[in-house]
Length: 613
Image (cartoon, rainbow, N blue to C red; front, side, top):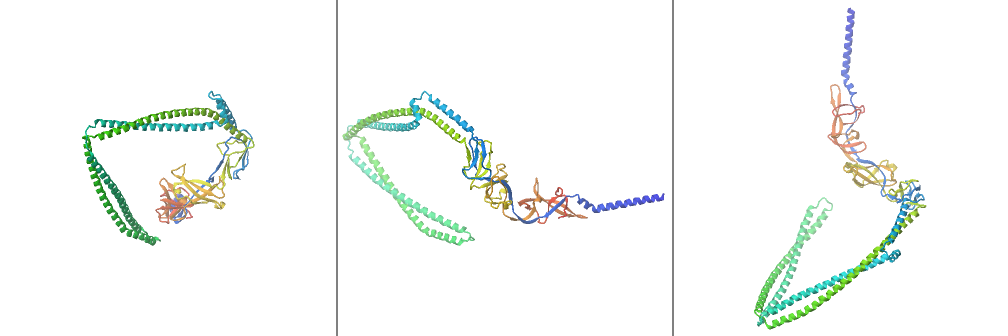
């Protein structure tokens, strides 16, 4: 019994020792066990260095100015004499066609038959005469009629102008008659109201005439004074403009001197030249001021003379008005027999002139009627000619339709046998769209040629951000450039990409050298190398809804070991190449940045470093 109890106690003691040993091992190796469950990450130092930001893309080489070889009729191809990539000369055979009528030839024959029927229908018109038909068949009548119509139109126009001219003369003559009749009536009224007494107006008439002479003399003096003043005022204005221009020049040159940059290599030369110009302008200033003062004084003197002449003219006008009023008052008080006889003589003369004027109205009115009759006659002739040419032209148009349709049939018939399609230019065959046994299509070129001497183009899309780093004229580098030792690719155009104009740009390059249309080229183009403070591997850059970021490893010392925590740092990518990117971020420059991991890594989580770190 005691032996069994003793064995039982030893077993419990052994189990307790084993348990405590296991717990002790787990305590000491817990971190090691946990580490094996953490994501294993590879890291690399953030460093400074150089980035060459290149934009890469690929595109298909296309002809810069392709020439489409077209066949306007549907024909079956017997054989193709060339293949894509062949170089051909102008006139070389590209295709041989089967000997057969094309659909276009059949259509042309139908059009010819229709034109002949239309001509026969036109012959049955009741308005046509045998003469019309003969003249239409000769092919010369229409042109003759056109010449006759042109002459008739000119004759009508001349007749219309003659009618207008004759009517104008009638109106002018009638206006003269109306004027004379008014004058005659006024003279008759004056004679009827003239009193039969005598009044001597000799003295008053003499005084009036003398006043007229004085006014005329004063007017001449006023005109001369006005001309003298205008000349002096113009001289004053020119002198004022000259001195003001010189003052502006002085200010301008002074400003230029003040704005000169002493650091420029030609500063002294520019300053000396400007100072010389300034001195010349300043030296000229007193003379210009003197000329202006003299011109101003002369203008003032001429103004005074003009005012004096105007006053004399006004005084002479007043004297003339007074003398005329005195004469009119004396005449109103009575008339002499001589005045009455003078009025009668004027009346006789006006009556004779009125008689001749009325005869002129009658003659010119008759001329108007004659010209109107001639105009009507010429208009009628023009109408007849227009009607006849319309009838004959209808036949001619029908005959021309037959001739055109026949020519088309003849042309297509000639092509129906032994027909070939030749190269219209010298160049390289870049595309063939037909094969033997197939029909040509008028809407699709049978072949496309690259003309001799014409270059090629290549295009691909990039983002707007990438396009901003490029300029027209940039020369691109070719990937595998050793294979294209004589090929040059130059950026020729940057424009919005029609597939996404808000976000993308289409780059178009000119390509020269040993390339062919349809060939794919991989190129890179962009900025020169630049130095940056923070460079990380491209694999380290991550992105989420908040933007781009990197994860760096931060160490924290624990009671038994060091723990490594992933920490997020937001970045802005400044430039990139194939393997690295330059970034702007809150970094010191010696951080470990996570490049790869065996499991997804989140910021704030613990990670373990790979053995290569």
